[in-house]
Length: 239
Image (cartoon, rainbow, N blue to C red; front, side, top):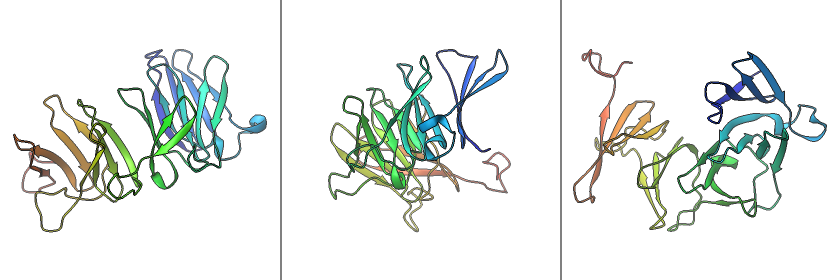
């Protein structure tokens, strides 16, 4: 069987791990050294897309969210029951893969749906709103990673479009991508991880190395410094 994700249960630190696999959800109790297998779906047969768990996420209230090949689900640890959020309504939860789940500081649940399109889950009416650029009404797609910095700005790492910054207060979108022959641009269009350090500097990982986002004091200019493998520099980034 294939294992796609593992998440430590912070309500029981050092004790429980939640594991997403292609045959369902597993709980590993490290103190007992035992696994418990939970199956989703009709009859709990363990078959079907709803049991192909690609991501596991525990929010700050202790709710366990599951992203599957069939959509979004929530697992109630007290009743050991799944609630599946699926609909044919295009404005609602997608019935296609959910590969990313993230809760921001405001408690909003973000996820990537069909074709890795970015969306927000409304907990009150159980629907999803797909995020669209306010200038061109295009969806934010190819989502691979997400990061929220200390100011509440959301940064999206994509598989082919570089980095997208979403300023929710201004409802604006900024794009950071690779520009040929521009050494100050992002060094590649595919982005893995994004991280803000303690000094407020944003770092972006790509297949070609590490990128540091520099900002002018007036905030009007931004550019990247690249850290890549240099065989002549033994102190540099290893290959």
